[in-house]
Image (cartoon, rainbow, N blue to C red; front, top):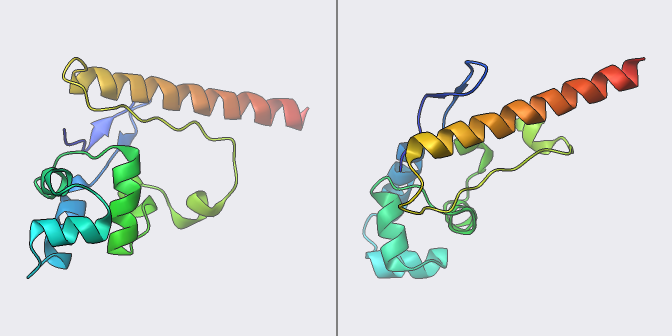
Length: 130
């Protein structure tokens, strides 16, 4: 599943440049076999191959691959550095890849959760500003 340029509930664009993650994996593994690279990344060879071919990894795999690549995961999540470093009560959404969940359903649910998070933050700001 590749998510790129999906509109959320407020019309803002959410991006997850999974193709860039795949390119970085391919570049880092140049000359390394898939099994050797996967062992270094602490993931299975099949999983690394799937991600390298553009499939969305689960959160734990994503973290391991980012560590192996020595890249900040925020660059793939569309977060600015200040947002990533700032402590907050953020909602975090992760859907396990299951064939029963359509990409459109996952996108809609993610947009709903993000809209609820923004509404909660706005309510908190109003309550604090009174």
